[in-house]
Image (cartoon, rainbow, N blue to C red):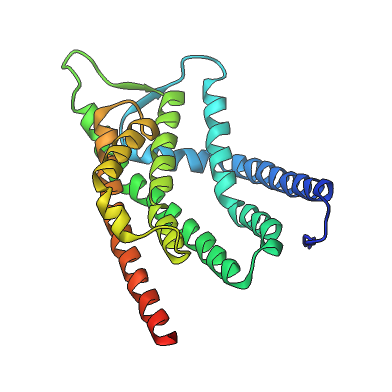
Length: 244
């Protein structure tokens, strides 16, 4: 495996970055093609939260493009270890030992919390959201979803929750590096809540229900992050006191 050298020139670093990106692109392409082979089974999983609802496609390529999107998302997830390995291999030569440890933990924890957010959204949030909207139907109007719109809707929710669940990892790493303090987070709590509301509006589909279901976990994760950051600060203070 190619390992970067600190003595490389700027042009050589760019060439290495290009090679890493090419490897990532080829891996994602291979993962997408491999996932497309099982697109029927994957589509069944995507449709599971919608239960007995009917789906249609409104243009000739819409269903095919929905299959491509499903395969692409699964391909990225499947090849994520390769993607993370390439990122790690590119940045680690320039890090000290302590930073390498933190980055390793961040990558592993990041993958775990991202998958946790996706699983939570798939099994809890999606069924609640779909049930809410279907429950608003009129007696003379039956719900019928476009396949392309549904895949876009479910992808947006899964991605949003996956990213949101990264919050504890980010806060813990910043606290461990001394770049953020729990007292600062508590002092600016109201501004953080405002940012959470804005982020929920941007990340989630354009409806109040999805935004509320996303903002709620974000608030809980923020409070959890503040608690963990406080624990890290107390531990660092004890270590510094013991050394002095």
